[in-house]
Length: 136
Image 1 (tube, rainbow, N blue to C red):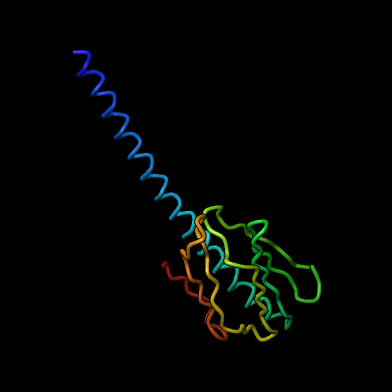
Image 2: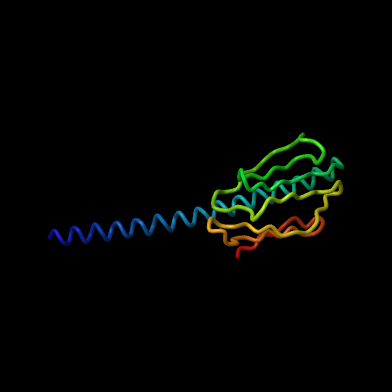
């Protein structure tokens, strides 16, 4: 009888850990997805703002403090930041310039997982294309 109870407790613990780990992994994916959706919205908003105001905009993807800063090119006015999840980080500091006409030069930003492996590739398209994110 005691062996059955111990076996049942061990089985319950294994099931509990399996379910909680699965939920954690799914939440990490949702955090990344939500971040890239918000980043895309802010990126397009910055393109629109540069076109309407005829001003360059600088986007700084900062690795040290887990944030992306959007600001006017020649001043720190009209700036705002968004944070990216702790589970990913860019491979290096990036600075993206949006011209007065809303255009950007093409580039790829690799987002790494905690182990330093490429998890996402963010491809910024020429001109008004915005960007696409591919999971590796």
